[in-house]
Image 1 (cartoon, rainbow, N blue to C red):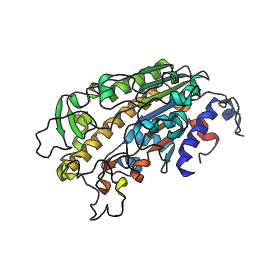
Image 2: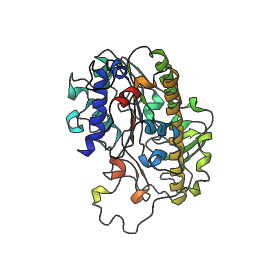
Image 3: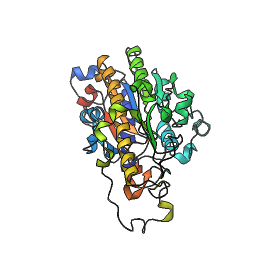
Length: 371
């Protein structure tokens, strides 16, 4: 039951926004807002562990903009994903079905399996909302799909409009280092699902997430006078860990980064199938590289958080704070050296738990307390 609580509460809040009646017994001023169609701003980060956020207790990586959402709304501490990697998880929360029902156990579109059933955003589109996505909501390959700028496994029927945000990813000019399977340091920065840190030249707009924030800001201003469901997909901190140089100083020198405690014999009671596909051992990452991986990840989170702030500021500038339900989440969690594991896929709590903050529009939150 707890695993589905976040999703159930979110759907409840969003469904209420479509209704023209309310069960509230609030005063006349509150009743006046009951038939208003609240906007939905759905922001999702890629491969984000809750422990990297300051609103979840991180003292090193500051995320003031995500914290803003948590401060005004509900911070879920037991929100669990239905899939431990991008494709299944995203198809599940967008359709409302488990991965075995969507048939998405990899990286494809759920439409062939769900038929004409409406996805989350499509339901709003069918009820008079402008529904748009910017960048990755359904699955989209990172870094390959971002470099190509294509739609990936997106579902066209879910949107009124859809926009992609191409970026250079690991090819971004700057100082890059491949940390994975590069013990002699001779391998240059490489693409694919590889641990690479790039301290990039230039500003935010060089990168996909900077472009995504800019497009989201544009769409909020353009559609501020009509109800909208806007999905904003940021690809950081998914590998490669790429961010403008300005986001790195708080995490340097990298040797000051702390790693989880290494426990001798930690894997002895873990079944072979439970040993993650990426470990410090098979990635050949020594302590220096592990600490740099954490620093690069945190810099990517800080960069992503700054883009979240731009979108929230646009919502405020448009005067839509009190008319918009804001949700921030990730598709799943991420290992940063716990059990000597890295990345995703495992069934450890670190992976199945995802950060989720839910901020209802102010009038709605005044009408009834959020459970």
